[in-house]
Amino acid sequence: MLNDLFDSKKPPQGFWISSEAFSLLEAHNCLPGLGEAQPKLGDSEVASVQILSLTEFEKARLEGGLGPETGTLIVTSSEGEAIAALSNGADDALLLPASPTMVELVLKRLSAKVTERRALLEKLTVNERVSEEMSILNETLQVASRRFQDLFNGLPVACFTLDRDGFIQEWNSLATKIFGLQPWEAFGFPVWDVMDPDGTGSWSYQRVNDLFIAEDGYEFDWAFTKNDGEDVYLACKVICLCDSRGNRVAAIAGSIDITARVIAERKVELTMRELKSKNDALVLHEGKLQKALKQLEELATTDGLTGLSNRRQFQNFLADAVSRFHRNGKPFSLLLFDVDHFKQFNDGFGHQAGDQVLKKVGSILRKTARSNEKPARYGGEEFAIVLEGASGDSAKLAAERFRVAIQEGKWAHREVTVSVGISTFEPHLSEVEFIERADQALYESKRKGRNCSTHYRELDSQMIA
Image (cartoon, rainbow, N blue to C red; front, side, top):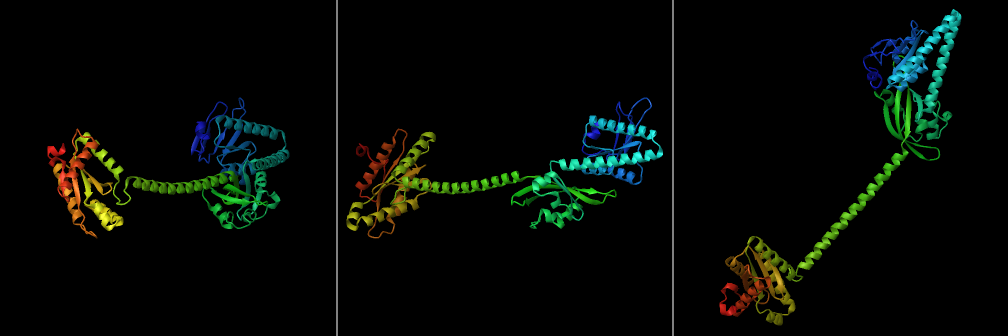
């Protein structure tokens, strides 16, 4: 059961302690609890050790209820309570959590001290006993005071105490080292004058008031500028000290130097900002690069005059259609266009007018084409369209739709017409043979008088041969 009590940070509401070295102890109303331990020192010799809370100890001390024949042990999880008890005359203090071995050691040590005290008192007269008791009490107070000072000065934290009005009362050695101030430069001065002379708000009358009314301690981060101009960043925790009536009369402020951590965090933050800036620039650059690549791709696959796909892209359209045909049997056809009498148009109206005709033909083909129809400039005054999913009959209808759209266009100098050749792909054909069929059909359209469309299947065997 010792482990249940002393290895816990939260004191229980009642507990039993028993071991070979000590008789049974019952405690109740524990803060951590009241009770009496009777160590077994011999067959008949027994020394008592009272286990008291800080509140009950103060009450007993004020009422004179602490006899010299009984040792007083303060058991607490608060270092502040332990310091206060030792400063006010407790024989010893035990900070929780503590191991059973430590508990037994403290009880034995305190019991031995009580036994020694009893033996001494029995040998003295009443006056001597009173004198000795006063001497012992005085020595205990001195020891407790020295213990407190040693503990306070030896803490690995920069500590100082202040009263309810904010005036600094104690100052430990690490505070001198961290803040660069001697104790005499801080004693008796308001904490805000010492720690925050520039009035940044790190320490103020309002902050002192806030920390004295905080329920469970007070924590905050703050910065201090030393006399040499060096900035020190600190994490502070403040614990209030109470008098016997529970009134908060003082506070201990402990600060840990976190300058290295703050500087590291700022470097990380700066690095992250720099990385974000570089990443944003990289994203912007990548966007520009993608745009440039897209433009290059368009230039590589687009005819500069008409804006249609160029012959290279036409070959890609054709290869994709052939691949789909062999994969799933999807039919497709090809239309080849030739602008009628284009050389005469160039000779009569000039090459610029001829270019305008080619651009408008390309525009009409693009506007007339459906989603499965992919127009391209084949070369010179020739154009081609891959018709995906189109059989012979539907290809013929599509050819007429394109031919009529061009004929009905509004032309600047004279009517412009086209001749069209059509071929529908068959399994045994190569791409070259497929295009040659459309070219033969185109030649037939020209032979018949132009401004018409001819499918390869319309050619007689003699003409094909």
